[in-house]
Image (tube, rainbow, N blue to C red; front, side, top):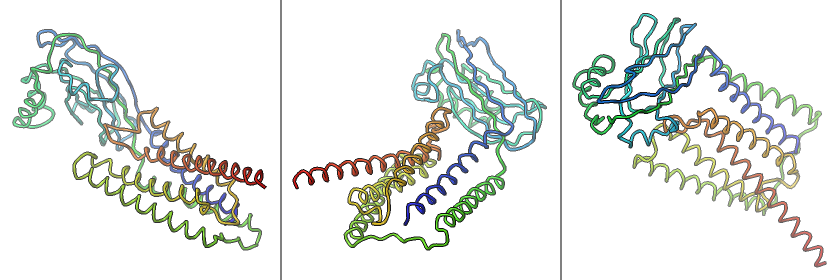
Length: 364
């Protein structure tokens, strides 16, 4: 395949990736409300000061909304380990979201939490009320009113172990609430198809411009290259099988949460591709005899940096890991690492060959 054909293919990938990146960004551009704040609660003889705190947000359009809700000890961020292990947090926080008529639309209770949910919300002013609970009786009453029946409330209260949780003192909690209007699923499908069709149209135009009516030269590999490529396929295939087997074992033992499976299986694919491509590059069988490597090297770098940038942006905005689960945006980071590793392998191979050629010339 000619260098121009490779450039066209890489450009297609860039357009598709950029399109899907724009779709993800547009998800957060609808009607939304976001706020972070901290609140100090003092516990004395099983009484809290204050007993409640309230926040409000406004919805201007009726639709499905994604709600990200969290609270934790100040400085702990989204890591809930300390809050779950430290019995001295002082109280349980009950949370209720009420619609403009005062009816509850969502409720939960925990010492610390980070969760996402989806609600159908109509226009109006909504109120979120946090109630600080310091006794099993208070929790049961709250749960019966907002969360569940009496039997479940009593069971949950025993699991919380208020004797361990409630201790006197002042604690500062960091609260966060994000409300985002969800894009219509049909719109997202059409947007994705538009990105793909646009990429195909660009590819056809570029190929026509590059070929100028001439037939594109097909890639040519000699017998040694074909043999090495076969070995690369084999090593990549066995890497894929072994990594999938490991994921299955972890899945059966419960080490991998169910919602993490997509990311882990995609990681297996990336590992197989990495082994195959690295082996072929190192044994001079990745590129055809009539193919130049400079354009491929440039696009390996561009695609790698582009996806690394998307991954870093997800880390910065906290969307890479949600409630201990890797989001699909983690695949951008993995894809970026994959292409950057291949770029390094290609550069090291090129430097090694240059050094070897220089040594051969000195011997002559």
